[in-house]
Image 1 (cartoon, helix red, strand yellow):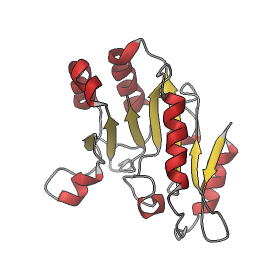
Image 2: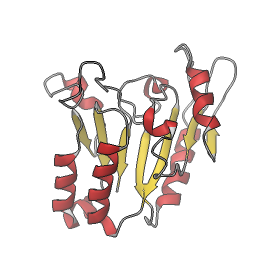
Image 3: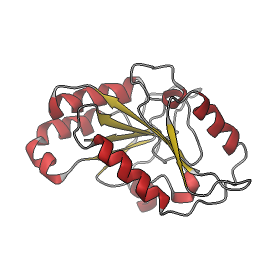
Length: 198
């Protein structure tokens, strides 16, 4: 989802939302980095991409870059552990529109509560409502079906991919596509910035 078209897609996830107490959180982030190392970086052709990356990195406490970076290519960049309470953070309010993704962790009392907390966070804090991606292990889906169903039903996004990239909605042509209904014409918020992981 991040590496497709070097991240120059309106439906590229920009914020990974994890559970702060998920035992495999660090393992997931490390594996994510290992996978990015294996993907060749691409031409950063879109105007202003490098300056946007620099703005995001200037506000980051920690970040990692993966792959070749030179005058024409940008490394895959992951900013981890953006404080979820820092609602003014650039990661939550602007679309990076480059090969960059951020991660934030939310405290919650178990998976069911995380579904509720993550829904509220995504709807009220993150900018953009074009599409979201919810990734749930099948075992957890069975064990927490009601909470997951509620999360999907209550997320305020035009298209939601459950264990699938929401780009399928665009590619298939027949599903709905566009920002969540209700934005004023002066602020459509069709940029995609969200991804939730259980």
